[in-house]
Picture (cartoon, rainbow, N blue to C red):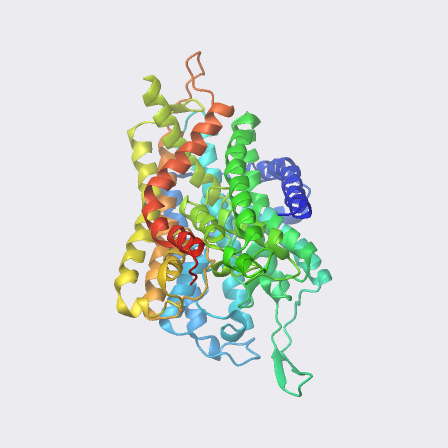
Length: 567
């Protein structure tokens, strides 16, 4: 580890914290229906979209209607994207002549992008036409991110309103998230990326002659526009197979810093939105502090492990950090930071090969996802994910002191606990059950590229990434097979919608409850004690659930590496 590396990490943290309050204030005004600088231009567009949806900003929905609208919209999006991929060979904007995508891969890709996962069992530049990239994948990058933001706002209203029956309007929340937050930011980011050298063109691929006289085809396309939303919306699917390690997607350290900030910006700002809407910004800062503790611990361990490198190399007299699978222009520090950020959020974009990290360096990205990606998390998804753990934490605290558990004046009772536990347990169900089956199924094991514990980690990482709606991969696993395409697709749907529906059910239950005034016996949820309780709850639940699986993979790999064996 170097001073320069830590300074870069601290610069990132400083800029992020500086963005939280202004962005949180802007988003609060947007979702509260207040006037913003963009209102004169966007209000007519907003009202036109409401008319198309058959609703208005004055109509609100019960949580069941909210959930039904959300599920039907996402089902339609899945079908449209599936058909677009299946028939891309006969559709326009296909200058490279891409063939139709197969049925299993189309299913996997459609569910992946609708679920905000963006897992890719294919190479983008060799599989997808421009139309598929723009009208299919990029559109879902916007609406899947907006869906997560809408759910978070619905849950925040459940705590901020004294009592009622409606949690908002899904169509209104999604349209506002897209029009006022995602789209304007992405227009600016796209122009910045083009300025930094990222391509944005509908022209055909370019043929070049190498110094050896061979022909090389250089893939181009509408890269910058997809790059902007894939980062800001924590989607993560790369236009190119190499993702943010590709120089056309991530040219230099400036673009790298912008991308990392984009991944965390909205998720971190949601804590401030929560604080503002419940009338106590300290509540939001307490949640962000809990996220920050887990994040900094992960960065510290990963950076230390990668900077230390492989001890076997030291025995050969080759000192230095682990640069295998990393870009020289980013180095160990920024590769480690990017890996922790992208797996702490449900992004999945990578600027280094996670499978080439040391065992402990690769362990942290796995843990980040297995904890439910609540360390900032995806846009909206990270916030409603950590609220589930907050419910568990205050319930445990209430049991310890013999009081009815409550959070911000809302009593936490059996229904909320059942829904929270159901949502939390669906992740290990998808991650561990599919991993166990794939580890013994001959056709699934045949796709593993590495023997021993690292091979097991490849399988575990794939299903963890899918169910956590992350989309990154360890590499080495040939996932474009019927088994992996179908089971990973199912895992993505489970990780997305089996969390969303219970979260909305909790919102519907809480909003109908009257707010109880704080008393002398009320457990304070805006101080260090609550932060420690929340962090401990997250670690204990994750540790007890996933430690046996991690022990078979990264932990064993680290121990045998010390003993002199690598995989």
